[in-house]
Length: 310
Image (tube, rainbow, N blue to C red; front, side, top):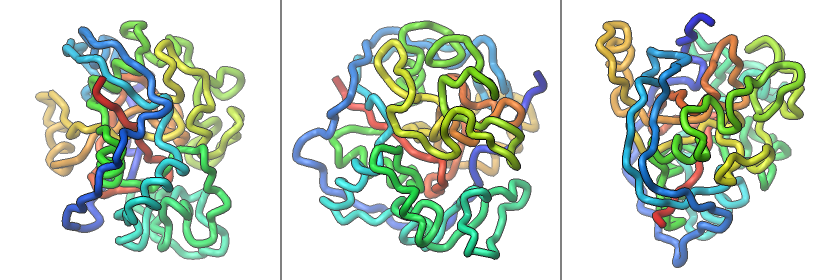
């Protein structure tokens, strides 16, 4: 398969500068539904990179302490509890707009601005975590689906309130492997497809024009919709990209990679891919796959999960 390096995962670039927001910590850790992950020597990366220029290899080993991680991504209901208790206002709400995938833009919004080169991402005024695709679209908000339209800064604020933090890349990959070693996916090696193999929520059809929804979902699925891996963790790939605590870095001597990274200073690392990923264009729904996005960006396919120290 030819390497796919196009910027499919999210629109890039900061939308503005905001001062930091201090959020009161919850009285008790909100780690209900978290599962234990053993410590030890963890594997990061792969010996079989699908997109080498993304820094997926080589394999390296990292020592980790035991930790607990959410069985699923943080849901709309969980984020709503955080907002209700703290009065937190997300960055998208303060900016007044966010990015929406073209097929999700409401019909009554006739004119939108696209992102150059990835025009399927549209600027929609009033798109927030409560009204994901813009004003009047609260009907697509489901309590058990992952919260989206949240920035890295928003995710970090929630994690601190919940008594936890965002996972490192090493922790995320260690949890995703479920004790299986250098596997491609949380369930093993079997490749998802467009016709009958649906272990996760990704795109089926021709991206970006036609999604058949053969896996049962055209956009997000419930956070616990798909079978768990060996550690009991659900939907680690597909569905929504998940913010990590790490800055996006690539160890590479290639000039093309260095040039790309020069415009991504301070970008944060996301893992797991999303419902918009397809092998023909964005083969990043693998454990070792990676993406970098500015810390204040938010989209309809970006979420997160939380870890807690054991």
